[in-house]
Amino acid sequence: MKAIFSTLLAFSTALVAVADTWGGSYSLGPAKTNIIEMTTTIKPGAAPSTQAGMLFLWPGISNGTGDLVQTTLEQWPDNSWCGAGKGEWCVLKATDSVTINYKLGSNKMTWTQTVTIDGKAVSTINSDSGPYMKGWGTGTECNNGCTGTISAQKYTNTVITLDAADPTFGSTAGSAQGATATGLTSEQGGKVWKIATINVPAMG
Image 1 (tube, rainbow, N blue to C red):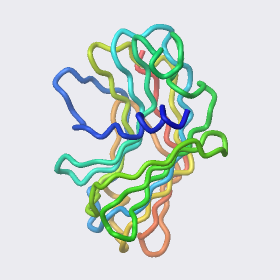
Image 2: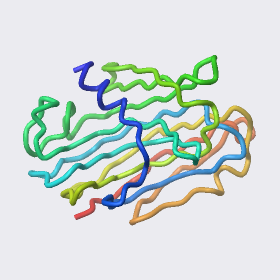
Image 3: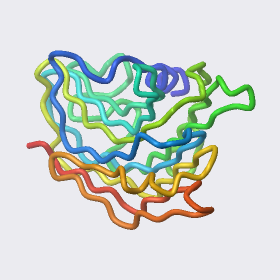
Image 4: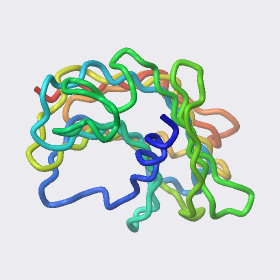
């Protein structure tokens, strides 16, 4: 399981490809300061019974110039490489609560990505992506004519920490394709931002 999640965690490519389509999303940014840590918990819901392309669910942070930190939940036409069958997500169950944490190291270059499922840490990976992350958002990414999500996704207990206060960060919130959020609050003058719940509707 750890090796599989390391593969998923290493998915760090351009956000947009020509063939991509998108489901609902919610985002914050760009911040006037820099994101140094993020935690959120996602429940993926049921996966499509079959998959025509590649379907990815993720929370990501980006510097706006192509570099990002991104852990993905995935479904492929043939899931055998990750030990899953048709109608399943790679590695996890539809009812699992998956907590994802990104944290910038003391060297200001290395990000540690940690995945926890229902309270049990299953994988950690480090990658150098730099200190200047300005944006945060969820993604429902559909590649190569994928079969879209058939159930809603729910993100809870999202916490975004900046290296210095930005009282205006909350005003940058945006959503697409019917995604909604409740309970956006800030602490420490705008250094820590919390979102109680994000609901992303099914694509189909």
